[in-house]
Each structure stands twice: as C-alpha cells, then as structure tokens.
Image 1 (cartoon, one colour):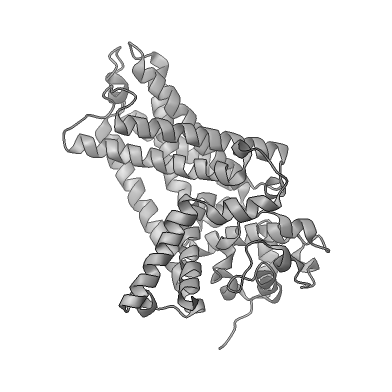
Image 2 (cartoon, helix red, strand yellow):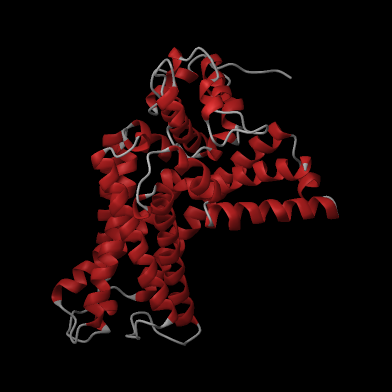
Length: 388
C-alpha cells in the first residue's frame, strides 16, 4: 500500500495547539500508562509517530483520536515533557478542521481573532434579521413571544438546522469513510448478514447507551487516575451535563414547535412547570448552566492538565452555551410574570440570536465531539465484537 507523507504535518499540528511533540523519542511510556489502551487502541504513541513522519491520512483515519478523553496521565508521566495529552487534543482539532469542507473550523482554530469577530458578527446578524421582522410590545404575556413572529423563528431555525445537518453529514461521512477504509470495514461487515447485524446492534448499544449516555470508560477508567475530586466537580459529569443539557434544550424546542404544528399548544403559551416539554427544557437548562459554569471555572483556575491550555474557540463555545442557558432561564422568568416586562423582549431577541448561532457553529467547534466520538467508538466497539 502506498503511503503519502506530508512533511508539514507536525508543524501544522503545533498550530492547532500541540506542544513540542517532536521531543518524543517513542519510548511508549504514554501507551503503557493510558487506562484506555488495549489490543485495539494503542495510543497516543502510534498517533504521535504518524505526526512525526507526516502520515496525515493515517492520523485522520484513526479511531483512537476520539477514544481518548484526555485524563492527562500520559503527559504527567512523559519523561520528555512532550505533552502527549495536549497533542491528542490538538490532533482532534486538526481532524475537525480536516473533516470540514467549509474551512470554517480551520478559521475558528487557526485565526482566533477572525473567528471571534465572526462569532460576534454572526450573533449580531441574527439579532438584526430577527428584529427587522419584530412585532409590537405590549403588556400581555403572550406578546413576549409575539415580539419576534414564531413563523420567522421557525423558518430561520429550519434553515439553520438544514445547514448544520448537511455540514455535519459531510464531516461524518468523510470521517467514517476514512476509518472504515483503515479498519477494513465495508457495508457487508456492518449489515451484510444476520451475524453482522447482531455485531452492529451490540456496537451501537455500547456506543449510545453504555458510553455516550453512561460515560462508562470516562467515568470508571479515566477519572480514577486523577487526584480525587468531589462528584459534583468530576469532568465526566460536567461534560455529560453540558452535552445532554444542550441536546435536551434543542429537543424541547423542537417538541414545542411540533406541538404548535399539530395545534396542541402555541409557542410561548403559559403552562405549569411540570408540563412535559417545559419540564424537559427547565431540567436541561439547569444542567447546561451548571455544566458550563463549572467548566469555565475549571479553565479559569486551570484545575487539571486537560484545561491548562484553552483556545479561543474553546472559550467561544463555552460562552455561547452559558449565555444560551442563562438567557433561557431569564426568559422563562419573564414569561411567568403577570405582565411581560420591557427587558423581556430584548432578552428574547438575545436568546434567539445566541441559540441560532450556537446551533449553526456546533459542527465547527469542540461540540463536534458529540458526533464524531460516537462514530469512532462504533468502529471501536465493532472491532471488539468481531474478535469476541
């Protein structure tokens, strides 16, 4: 098999945040101490070697990039201070940019000033566009949601979701094709027989239920190698709250729109807090705010090795998630007041603009992990099922 070598790969990865991984002399200590290493996932040693010799395609086709949760044990014990954990994080940023055909992810990571300015300009553009179609302000509670016509919000939201779906689908397809080729997996391996379907079903269960929802390896393997911290500050819990809080709010928004479409409840109609959709949004919002607040605090305090180095894109994502959660709660407070306060209209406009931007930028920043990681873990679980 012909291998194409890119001599600029190591320098490019350093631009994405990798430290002096050239100092690595391939001793294998990082692989030996990693709690996630097994017969089918020998990293980060092999991936570092890919970078050193310029094997770009092999790096991008590696499922091990996404099985790493950056516990930092490899960096703590590296005899050359080559920061293999930070290398893995930088390689994931590089992969996100490599899977993205729009080059927006590349801009967010490599041009932080431009990326931050773009994020601010995009939020302003959404706000101005929504404001251009605003309705009247009066003291009726329902008018709070009538300030920006629901049809306008829904139509723009559908457009944003289509863009995100297409961008995400293109990225996932590129990633899956590379990994499948590298692992020797074809459609027949996944769906070609009853045995293949059984293996694929078990792999999906392991990915979606055991790992993505239960965070089993992150919770039981990675967290145990760090200094003990209280449950409420553990990284797996904070990441779970942030991810599921965001997805829960997105789901509540889509359900609310669906209820309006079938004529059950108009958007913004006051309902008790225990109403299913409202309860889902409230719980998800609380999870999102707690998760992002603690993650921001950890980054400010540099509480562990995984957050000692933050990119502008990391801060942008956390800021957008936190602002979306907090403005949503403030908006809910305004909705339950006897009369719609004047500030409620502007909070509503701000919340909609931030939420739209957050969804639109999700495939191009770290939140893309929520999609790419399960795909990689599926191939990982499938390989385990084939050999069992």
